Length: 424
Image (cartoon, rainbow, N blue to C red; front, side, top):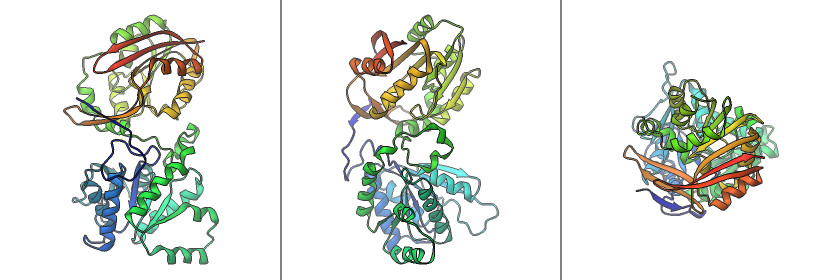
């Protein structure tokens, strides 16, 4: 049976919480590959990564030895989440490549050094720069520059260790370093200082939760925050999730009702199309578009429903158009969105419908926001839920310009609300 845990308070704890911070989720460590185990710097990074993992942050590093292995091992020592972004060179004789002893939960291979650096930047929300050589200097210079370019919703840079003051003073003395460039940088000398500093960013960057989709090519460089555990779980277990549902259509009754309400010919959108069973069924009647946050599930759903136009994207930031759809179907998706974004999401859905268009959604019923860990046999899926009361679902829809057609309840593994709305 799934276990449900209330979202933790924002504090430094000694046990791994079920849900980490909304804005800062992943912490990327940069540092030298040659620092041996047992060195004071190695030990300090190990302890820092361990403390951050204890507080629910995912630790990201380059998959090599030295500082990178210290970061992975520190997080893994408390069963934390780790990601390694590595590159195995064919021509670069002086690059360490992937360390087989760096046993991260997830490994991402890139084709060259530049793409590997980009991957480390994309995966991280905050950068912790430790002592290192020219490779670390190149990483530091790039994230420092990006911090200035995107200042305000930039990904902050933390200089970790007690050696930085003289170095930064030399930069200020000999280079053209302005106030914004200095404001990007933060200092921490101990694991506790690092954890407290990263926690403070939840307030500093609270205004950066939603981002204009027109900047999508640059989202990797800003702290826009919506890479949560739900998408990661679906990416990780997409194939197994799909296999467990082959030949099933758990909401066929509701799909048939949607089809009765939305007369063809029509263009419809499936929000949260998953591995493609629902959209494949709908594509027999309509011209179908799908939106899915999991990259791996998009790949599977395109095979399941080859005639549908299915794209990867986050409904929070993705433009889904205006006066475009006669019907929008959403099963098991809207409840994965955080409360502060729901009004904008409902408005976006309303705007995408033509006059008289139907919005049909299935969401979990309840109160509050939870993170659910469910052992599926093939692995533990960790998913965020915003639980809806019937009053809240109706209120948010009506506020967005949608009128209630009907509201039902359905009991499966949980109690579900089935909301049917029409655009006024």
